[in-house]
Length: 128
Length: 81
Image 1 (tube, each protein chain N blue to C red):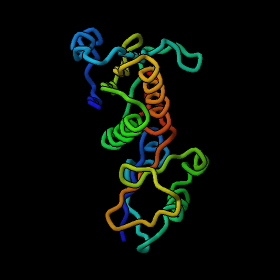
Image 2: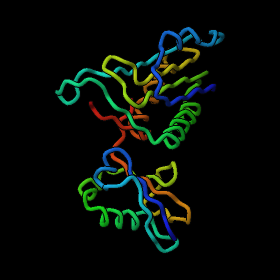
Image 3: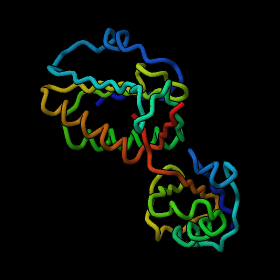
């Protein structure tokens, strides 16, 4: 399974990422997830979220999740970018692409990846 | 042995510092060390049940025996995405 992982303060260019998708080959499914900063947090209007990460541990924990996905589903590739630092409302904070032969495993792996991230990957956010 | 303790997110403010170093006997279990940290940083104590604790970059069992050079990290539930 090919993997790309990036935790960065740079804005996420979703269109560019999709343009750079590997040619299909045997991959009949590419599932995308974009996490977008909402304009409210616990019923308060906000302007942005400030993300903080314990980066080396976050990278390690993402790799452990990727390892588990590779054991459980026939996935061809995962690309994941998590933006940290100041992320204004409406901008993308998390972008994921999961490619597989068929949609069922691509959806399942993508869902699992995000669910696990929210349990173990040390990234936090603060409304500003 | 000296063990480095790190705090992340709002635990830094609660602890009043980003990190500290504490002295423990060799082979101390993580749970014993954690109890000492909560005692030393009482503002963290109310959150002890929801606190995530890592040794190095891994979550380990409370019975994990600490080794010289280990770094313990304390932080609140994660919120990526």
